[in-house]
Image 1 (cartoon, rainbow, N blue to C red):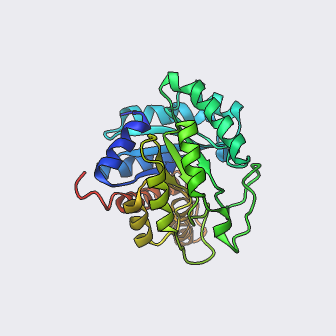
Image 2 (image 1 turned 120 degrees about the vertical axis):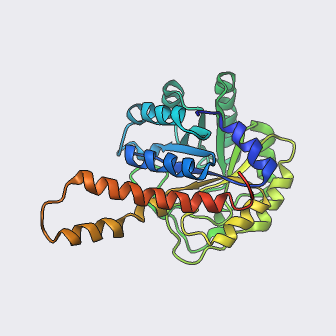
Length: 295
């Protein structure tokens, strides 16, 4: 069933777990992700990121996302990931997304607050949940989208969200989700993850009473024990995609090698890819739900 993400977040807070927020840039990934959630019986957030526009346009994938969400056996929120400009975000409003990430993290604090607050005021009457980002999420998956270039990963602490700024941001904007930077990386890590768990606890305490929940992006390759620690510290939404999306390659390569040059139908490869995507999604969702003993 298609639901508002705010409803999910309240339950995640009550029962101490995190909701998986997985990107679905094509039909196969969409089917795999929702299939994984249905098999586990857990809620799921499906994303379309502005960075996926070269793969599929928002207006093309949105009706499919909505169809599968409405017919799912579990709660599904339909979310925009990293909407970087107002034109794209308004296209998402018109396409029927139930939540939108208005990402103005590239701007200075006061401008980020002003732009985000203006968007919240615009879409709140429509019942749309808003996510924002504070700090800067370092990037190890460079793309052609402005603001998503390769980051300097030599010192991740320089990207960290400041506690006092998080409190100011949450109280001034009223966003439902604040994505914070505490040591995760978009894409894959260059070395072992080292999350600042205490910073999560401090930010959670600082934003208490604002109605803002905390999220993290870039969880591919994060040590499982650190993911659980982050959830226990207050993270309620976790974005996950790269590890799942790249994890299908070995199975596809094995299939190609097994055909030894004989004709191989693309439709058969897609089915194999979809099963591998589902495995990757289930593995992540099971981890994110670890702290909740029964769903």
